[in-house]
Amino acid sequence: EDMTARKLAELHSLAPWLLTRVTDRPGLEHIRCSSVTQPGGVPMKLKIAVVAAALALAAAGPSLAQQTLESTQARPLFKPSPTVLGEVVSMNSHSVTVRTAKDEEMVFEFDSRTVMPMTMPPGLRVKTEFHLMDNGMHHAGRITRLEPGSLDWEALDKQLALADQERARLDAERATIDEVEADNARSTASNMTQDATEYGGSINKAFGAGVYHVTAKGADGAVLAEKDFEVKAGERTEGALP
Image 1: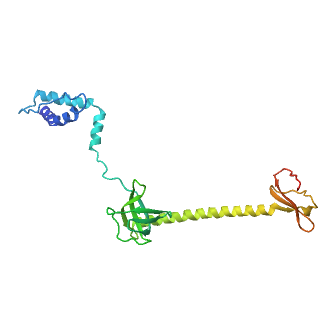
Image 2: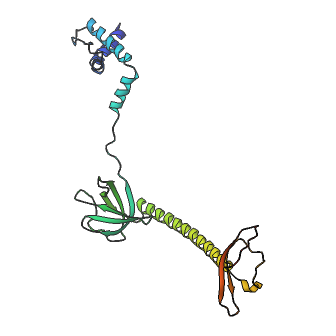
Image 3: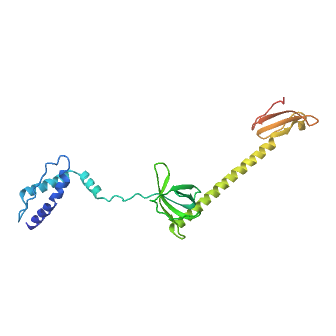
């Protein structure tokens, strides 16, 4: 009996909370409970109300429990701002230009709300926290001077090293392409011009595939006729100079 009395007392203390969580749901507005307390026991009406509230709470299912859980979860206080590491290029009365490790220059607007050093000479390493404004410009919320040996300083060093490696790789690829194109141009140029007079007025010789510019010259070296001939691999090419 003592244990039963304790359980009922616990339910009695939870009754207001249960009714508050339940009676605000559609279809459960009829549940009400008297708050009368009698020494030595719990009123029958209160017992019925507690049981009814408990049953209604159970009938509400996981949705009510989920809503209760969501309402008690802490919401994030702020959204982290994007950041950029780089070196100051220039600064005026309302903006600062920062060059990133990828050699891109970004302009950040600042105002009285911006937390920043008073002076930022060119070459100064900084960390800029910003957000994108409605007009598409970047507004700096905080600009911090980087200290040598700091984590941000080392992070910028790594970014610069990776950017240098990428630029070196691209330069090497471009140099290779330029060299191949130059070789192809020299090969084409050397094969384009053939002097018909070397073959007694006719050419009957195997040539590699390509376009050849054939020139017929007179005894005095004057050009009598010239024409381009396209030679295809494995095929015989015939033609006459005009």
